[in-house]
Length: 79
Image 1 (spheres, rainbow, N blue to C red):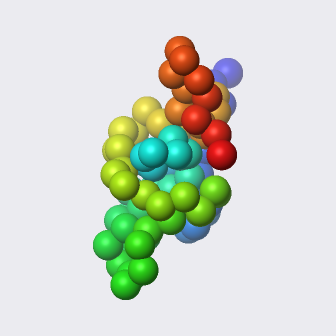
Image 2 (image 1 turned 90 degrees about the horizontal axis):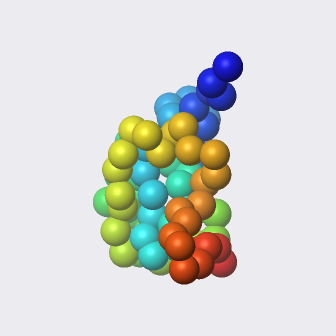
């Protein structure tokens, strides 16, 4: 059986469909990520590690990944 999609840590309702760069964490749905990045006067920060968010990658498949971390062959980008 397939695992249920992981949900957003902010609204706890929609599936996680974004990834923050450079940290690589996947914590939010598209709506909450947009509010985080464009909704405040302060620079956006990852809700997990608090690193500044430079870009947001959007992909519906992120919600079905085994981990909330982006992994490359060279390293795991965890802070």
